[in-house]
Image (tube, rainbow, N blue to C red):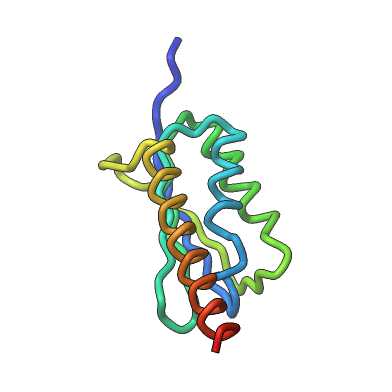
Length: 122
């Protein structure tokens, strides 16, 4: 019997949840649990916030929520983590999200390297 696909939204709020590797951290957990649908986004407001949408079988999603609530990246300062069931809607396949996140991280790395090179050169 095939398990029913469920979706959840997780909201992570804190003093320092951006720039600490949270998005790759969340994606690694989702991949380890074979969650096929995943999207996460930073929101640039105070306090800092990350919104996560995940879709998969009920057991995997429950384990994902539990793990996200119990573990955070080393330098994160989290104030609250809440989760709610979400109505099924378009959520990226995790491989699509992985490609987008990789491009965003490369962009940040190249910009940081260019700024360093400008500063070091003159």
